[in-house]
Length: 410
Image 1 (cartoon, rainbow, N blue to C red):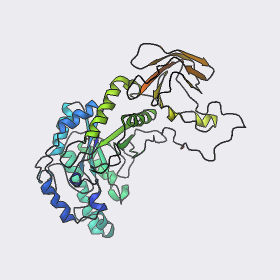
Image 2 (image 1 turned 135 degrees about the vertical axis):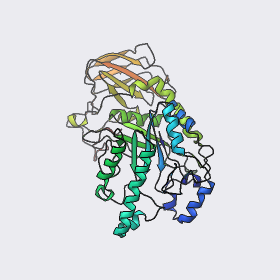
Image 3 (image 1 turned 120 degrees about the vertical axis):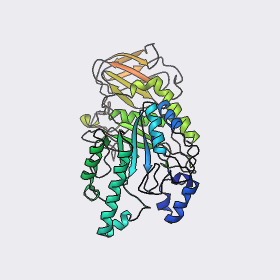
Image 4 (image 1 turned 180 degrees about the horizontal axis):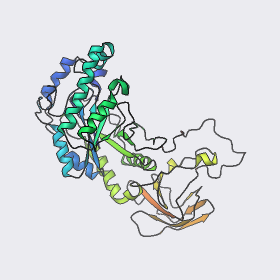
């Protein structure tokens, strides 16, 4: 679970509101007098994460606006010195630990309200030295005050490169204080894992990664954003991450008072209930890429029914759109031993002829209210070629390939 919460949440127009609307800094800082966070309940948020099947939580300790959600000796612009008078970072860490969740702390390298800011640092060498020193001191204070944590999640890496941020020195300092910690790749260095944002794409060559996505189109709370993802859409994201052996870092944006939007709660509970029934198809899976390159065919896209995942000799088919009483899977490069639906003991009748398998006598309607999962036991690690029978010279290629070279993005 990713949690974007801060002073910007009060304004209800996203976490970049200070920058995008050009709000004078003094005017923006006065909002701290109204920041009570009276409904920010770290225990309830962590309970929701557990209910949703999540295993760690990442909280925004300070976004680009410079407002800290913790007690700091380096600034008066913090939750402890606002109307809230609480250390929300400490509360979240305690709640997460009590529930067995790992803890990550997001912290922006950028800072729009402290002076000098990054723009001044670009223009003036003396301002740059002060800005970089302040940035390193913020990070030092954070990882010293909250020790141990599991992940330090950098963000706000512009306008400098790794050299400009003195990232090698920064990481060495952090690891001296917390040798066990994982660092992401957003200070210009590769870090311990990649962080694709807004898309699900495993790096090539593979390395540990997590895709950060949000439940609607906003990270910080936006009162006008009602474009909520369905539980099924979240399952699609999870399947794509599973295929690339990555994680999904899924964001909620509490409102100004700290309450989690009802829509976020409902979606996450539905996903969590589904994972109890079907989590086998997502956790600890193998990389699974369709064999487009090997056959040279175009993508006969299976997303009209749903994605595949794989683990050992088992192929999982997530039937996001129920196909009816009978349907076929083409392009299989293995023999099938048994097919069932996760959570059910009964075997499903099937007929296999070469690469084509027909599943028969299925229920007319989807047995699962969100998405049923077919468990397909194979005689070897499964492979599926999506180009299927389109191998004759008479079948032309489309004018462009709608499938990107990164085949883990479904």
